[in-house]
Image (cartoon, rainbow, N blue to C red):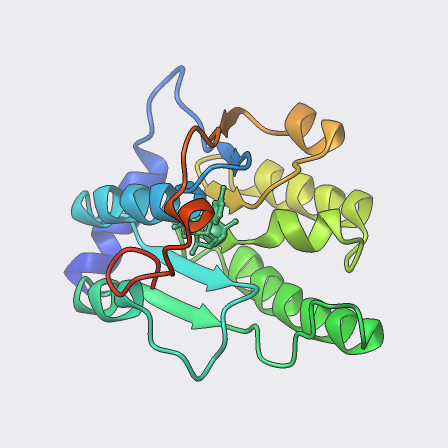
Length: 192
Ligand code: ATP
Ligand code: MG
């Protein structure tokens, strides 16, 4: 067993009274849901927590700034969004991609190898109805009862009442101003 493995084991066993693994949701119509989750991942990785980020909507072929940075920190990142049509021209394909991505999430959840799992844009996928929310929440609840120190973060607009109820921490980011509305495009280092 490597030192790192021991450290993670200690972290899981050593979580204190009145602390627990959290289900966290970053939602709302303002910019910052994904960047907030990535910031938390940087903090957690700095404390030796083993983290994995799975992105539902970003394309496998694109390299975002976060991919470069997180890999330098030893954080696993999977982008699974290839094949999404998003204009619902091919709903069957969107459902298939969502299901494949959720299978990877379940593999990571079941492994017991992680302290923090980030499911980026999963809330959109639930909102679009590409995955069955009740089923997902039941699967997450079962895993959390087996791994009480596991932290899970989900991001995306329009978190449902059910998801809000199931979560321990919900932050809603509200748009006050966004440069897109004055014709400014997405920029390197800010949006990707
Ligand atoms: P970020 O990844 O920058 O933290 P986010 O996760 O909050 O953003 P998403 O809903 O995932 O936002 O959308 C991603 C893209 O949409 C980002 O490029 C972001 O700048 C843009 N965006 C987010 N909120 C708004 C908004 N209110 N108006 C226009 N564009 C937005
Ligand atoms: Mg996002």
